[in-house]
Length: 85
Image (cartoon, rainbow, N blue to C red; front, top):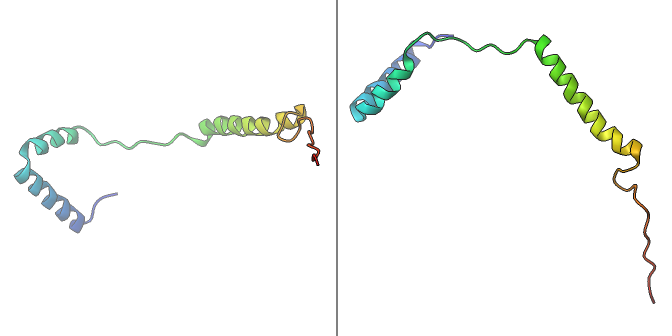
């Protein structure tokens, strides 16, 4: 996606002001602009699916195992305090 003419002009103005106000910083930042610009691709669905499946299985187990084992909240022995009068 390319920039519009207005955006290019605005960035050029910012670069000009930076060169005038802080030439050392402008030189340091210019070193980052060398080389080819490449895009980063996202992993394919085929690679992401096992990770999502594993996460779903772990979530289900974290919820189901305590309920099956009887160690979930509220599964402990009932203790009732009798009022003393």
